Image (cartoon, rainbow, N blue to C red; front, side, top):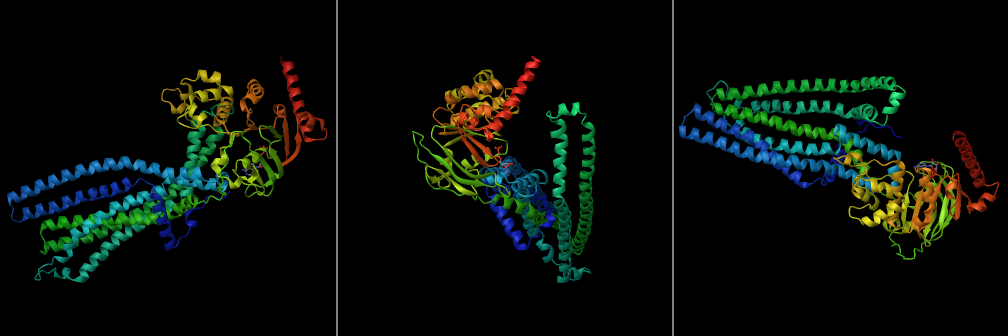
Length: 636
Ligand code: ADP
């Protein structure tokens, strides 16, 4: 597995930065556009309010220092109050709307990932490198917010910065055009050189401080991998390990507190070390950046005050220009900080883009699967061999196997003999490395995948139910035929448990989903029955059961066997198990060993072959059961 790369290992050219950002913005187009538009209005109104106050305060001051016309003063004051009130009102409405819609946009970002995960080739879902990539992306998203949330935040930051810059330039422009009278000793401040020096000081303040804080931010970005690891461990220690009830028994019995406390101490040292390093750098750079900005602002205020003193404009002008310059610096710094932040964000965004761009390589067929009432579908494995990606050894070798219509085929073999892999190939979760699988003589790759999948109901060994309502789980739909769901649940042996469910088919299969405590947690065996009912509800011509009784108690297991024919009806059934005794009822048994099909026939035929694997496995398991039986008898 690849180690998580630190951001500093990734170097990007300017062109690459731009490409990544542009691509990121395209992805952000999935975010509801209302938020984007509302954000612009929010920024406009947020910026306008301080300018109204600065502009009218300057006018009022000039009036007070000049003609002192009462009517004009009252008018100016009322106008300032009125404009403030109106813009505050609009601002708060827009703020509420934006806040509410911003949640939508964060949800939309998560949906970008879930849509990708839904559509990704299964090969990539199982690929450890892809799993690591997604793990890292999730960590950035929720912990450090780098990646898409950062890009969205940058869009907000840039819209917040642009308006104050435009308004302040308009308001401060006359600072440089209004001249000091020629008889003043400060007339030299009119010269273009003085203007250039002031602009340079201003530039130094607004460029240097965001640059310094960007360096501080870069150190955080570079430490993200460590920080993520720290947070991951934090949640692992305090939520999964100690607060979770699953481990509470073992913690008590083995007094695991000692060993957990020791690891927690090491973790704290690690986490504090990372945090301390980042905080130290950040404090240094932000102190430097604040110092630079205070010094340069002081020099500029001196320039404004001297121009007013020398008679270039009135006292109100001081308020206007100082206010405008302050807002300009803030707005411009915000712009630059956000643009600088984009640079730090590129490495994270690039990872997300690469993950989202993972191509779907699975061959997409175009043939329709013929709908047949007689279920006359013949499936054949022809010389199929398969290696998992990145593996040297074959999980399946030269498999030739035909499924006959309406047949009950048992596939047996030790763990790791290739039984589940065969089902994965049958369902096209993977395609064979060599050979082909055919449906009615045509390679299954050539069929439309969804139509092909309609032929199969599979209960995998590691099936998962959704934490939704029982009925929804069985029907895999919100709207379903309750009678049919109930019928399938009783076929799978769940009838009694269903009668106990507080809300019947509407009961949530998760305690946390119901406020009134009516959700239930099912046992492994009960879940297996629900999964079986789900497979039956789908009513596909092929039903595949991979160790379907592994979590059932012996009585429930016996029920499934004895009702197996009734349960599967006229479907073609493939029954996988490493417990040979559970396959006796099948008329045809295929024995797998180390990825190969080594024997095939009925139980009687296979057991008669004394040198065969089936005979060996049967005897080994029979001996085990007999010994257990003896032990049971001794105890009773
Ligand atoms: P069975 O179902 O008979 O227990 P499997 O089909 O699960 O066996 O496994 C067959 C072989 O393939 C085993 O050696 C197993 O370790 C390997 N294998 C299974 N899944 C994967 C995977 N995702 N990646 C790599 N190897 C795998």
